Image (cartoon, rainbow, N blue to C red; front, side, top):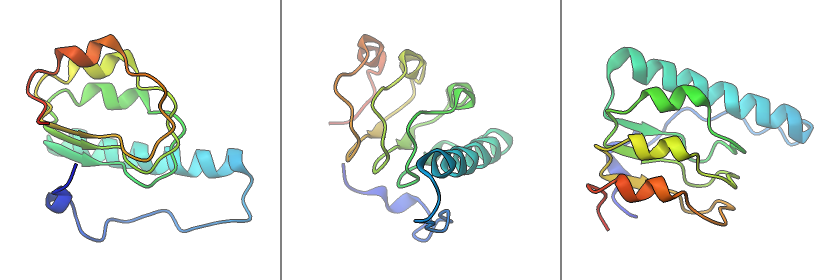
Length: 116
């Protein structure tokens, strides 16, 4: 999908740390995602950018943001999209490009407002 211009053009990214072990890098990415999720929960945000963090899984706290209309999860290392993503019934844009996802949950079918 294109048109992610509503996100901060220079969002804070974890600093590249090539010497960190993969497990530690995943923990840093997960921690950054949690910070962004907590900020979105407090502000009632309608959009969230978790793209490019290198996430291998999504924090469960993300499931509380059911008011989201736009969610960017591109450029991570996700292999699975959790079933609870189907509770995001207001979601209009979901970007999953550049991940390692092999299949999508049936619950994605509930997202009737998703744009093509």
